[in-house]
Image 1 (cartoon, rainbow, N blue to C red):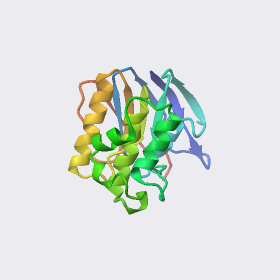
Image 2: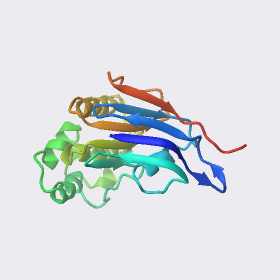
Image 3: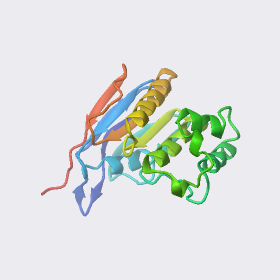
Image 4: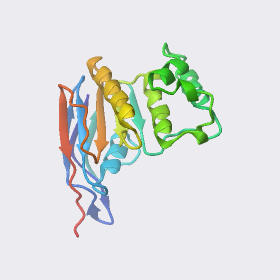
Length: 196
């Protein structure tokens, strides 16, 4: 579903990370680990097609891709429900409704609150709820565990497990130790490429 060969990006004539190679099949998860500054977000932006690599290739055969970045793309003045309503309508009103997605992520009681009043963890859950509304074959999730409490972490693990069991694939970056421990899972450690 996703194949990367000798992928690299240079800034100021220095590589951000050492060249990356991997092949991700359907129904498989790739965990990308690395310290802050190792290039995890840069790699995710490359995979999402937001920036162009300096060298190497990316082959994405997924029919649909969802990208969740640090900036959660949530409108502050809209309620959690209204934020998801927009995604639902834009996606052609799929079978999972915005309220169903919020319930699945444990946000039913704050569905009508303006997004600006939500905690960081609730905002992250609201962003993750979009994955339930608009299913995609490939998920690119940049630090999705950040700001989540233990219940939120468990919910995300469950989402990833269901996605992979249904034949989807996911690339997840993290600087923490937690991982969902799925049966079909790869791990990649990023090493910063700057010369110090």
